Image 1 (tube, rainbow, N blue to C red):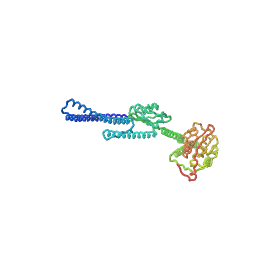
Image 2: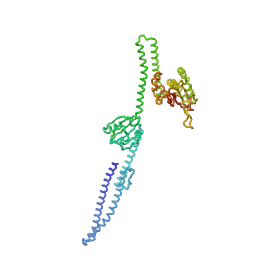
Image 3: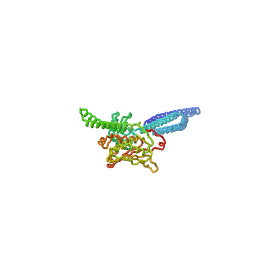
Image 4: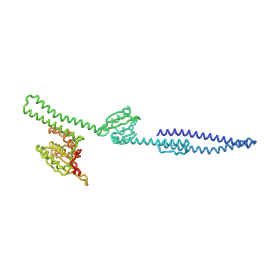
Length: 491
């Protein structure tokens, strides 16, 4: 309120001058009145006491002056008191305005200059109130907008003190950020502090990256100087972007590696055949067999890449229809039984309920095919693969079961605990050498995960070394309306 206080002081000076001028005018009027009374009295005395002595005239003149003074003093006191009272009200009003009470108003008591001034002061107070209310509303709107931003924002004074910070910045800092205190008390990331200091010192926009501000998160920093002094720092969380970019680079590197290995093998054997003018039939047959094996591996990798791109696409659609869980298990065993028998492994059912689930039968054949093939590769020593399903128990006693849990279990060497959280990642292998020897592409379980999630289900694995591995996934039960309706293509 410094500007308001200065305006009040200037107004008080002007008001004092006006009051002084009015009192001076009143004094002049009183002198004129006294002169008129004296002239009237002296004229009467001269007419009535023409022969009397000058002593009598002086006596009468003294009484006339006293009478004029007695009449003038109360009038002057009344006028001064009225002006002083109105002046005190104006000063009290001005103090309330200076203290921030913009609801203060002066009562209008007439139509003189004081009343005009009081009306002008009231209008000024009303305008100030509207201006401050509008400023406050805009401040609150700006604060709400900044709080709703996904970016963290903090404003710094020229002295390096916190001026303001939004809710995101408060959460990232992990401790309440108080205005008026140095930023370094709440944030210790050197990159952020360096960007802010450079923006304050050089009055230039500075950019940077903060990796120690919050555990496991990366932020891009944009620190810009403010026109009124200080700086504004905006932090954009790029953790997901960085993770996606790393995943993309890893994916390209893995695809390149997976393709390069069979291509190198094919190229080597073809060059050997080309350079040998008369290769033996046995050598040719052996080399061609190796070339065919690698070509088949490349073909499988290409098919799996296309399948993965399909299930990861936003346009991936499923022909969901009510299907019995027991039918899904039976079809999986029937369609894959021949492959398993040729390997000397027994494929058996552990039972399944007749509950109806919402599923795409073709997609489920892909899921079971990949899971059983994976069990066949890594659990062949157990000589058994067990496929089954069961109704999952409700979480509360008054709730009904809402999904069916399917399992594919092998009795092989099992999977170490540290691998269980990553086996559904693309190209992740527990045993890389064994996987490549068996022709695996490292994409089967990633495809299974995406297909199950597209059905609205969940997938996970349980295993102990030496006790085999079990893959679990769930499918939601078909609602009554879906059972009565024809199959629909759902996204």
